[in-house]
Image 1: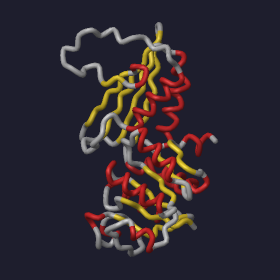
Image 2 (image 1 turned 180 degrees about the horizontal axis):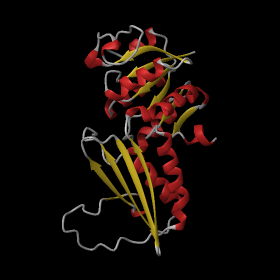
Image 3 (image 1 turned 90 degrees about the vertical axis):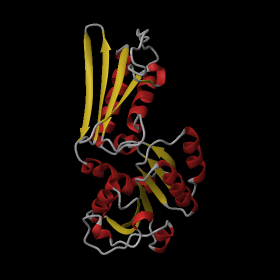
Image 4 (image 1 turned 180 degrees about the vertical axis):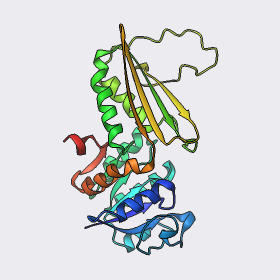
Length: 261
């Protein structure tokens, strides 16, 4: 049985992760960390049966002898949390997004005695969406990525949108130049991603996580869309990552290796 701790346990995603881990017979939830809610019994913020007090610091993970930690916090906190995990030989599963190339290089060099798995989107359908977009890219000359999230998301574009555009750009370098010469409102054509692929970010209350990839060529278009309507949609991917992260030395980005080998 794998002993698991959760950073950001009192947040919406963190609480959902706690519930999923607690409900899996192959895992044991042994620690929950959230400085803003330290001292609370976890059952006050998550649907778990076991009594577990929310800890104030990462040291809680060591006291509980956690083997794997899950991080759904914000960027600055996640950097500190991953540094702690690497230093103490804890495997890390990360859903926080926004890491820079420098961050990834540092994680790759510091996770030597344990493993780190960073996943922009844990929804298995979203992973398939990115794979389909990558496969389609060489057959189309134009493409745009539209990502839609709830109005509490702090970063834009999403990590999923960025990774999708990067993979499409790597699959094909032949993209038609944007014909737009005048933007009536600055930014109307979105941000320019890799190979100039436009990325549009939408923030609307009531949504969770959604993305559509539009591809076009002469006489036809292809739309690839994925919708997550509830945070539970991410949990099968999170549980898969927790169970397999220890078998993936160093740094791994994305669920592809876990799903497709």
